[in-house]
Length: 338
Image (cartoon, rainbow, N blue to C red; front, side):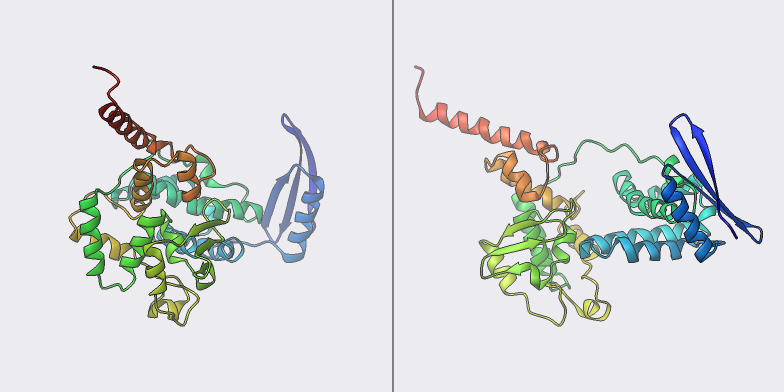
């Protein structure tokens, strides 16, 4: 088995096409860099041509390389999403998975009542797996090139009124989960994401200096969250357990994975008779009350961990309402006009 490299000139420049064939099985891949083409050919010659690559095997390889450094909560979410893809697509050779199959799977997700924005998150979970497959030479191209995400509406802002917060927290206290109330309170008081909270480890919490240090956030940067007010009591009362995770159960001790509370949370929301509300909306609730308290958007962005102001501009109208009421009080208290 010998790899052959053919140089081809195209409109966008020269490419080097590597072809390897043995026992009726062939593999080929194109590179813009000749050195990379030669390296790939040598790898195939050394390791041989893989006749097939099953979807589950590919996902396992991807997770072993690319998911180890992600936050625990993020890993949990992506693992769950990838499991759903396996359920819908089965476990075929990845070369047999087409854009048509993936678009049908999108429809299946919608029929299950999953919102379009959430379907987009499912696509974000599987798409890099196929990019990885291309990088490894398992396939020549990714079928996701012909799979479009749904158009999402402008940033959704659903936040709880004070009375709704009272009802929700009451039901969280009544929950079978010993951690749900604490996790929801932390989300309300800090705007932390679900994955950031359930993925908290004892090493992330410094009660002496009053700070939570989030090493692996969604945008890839470290973020610090001050431990103030009720957070001191909440975190101080969490019982230390036999795992690295702050919010651990017997499930965590057995599997080494973070506690999963989304289903329990949805049940509490239903019992509290709150409509159209998801866990991520607790983050919106925290941001909304910050805006209504008169805090500027830059500070809100820093607290939430956004790199730019674009994500927090959705709360600007709430801040403007506060400014308007302030000016109304000014006119009431200061009689400038007769």
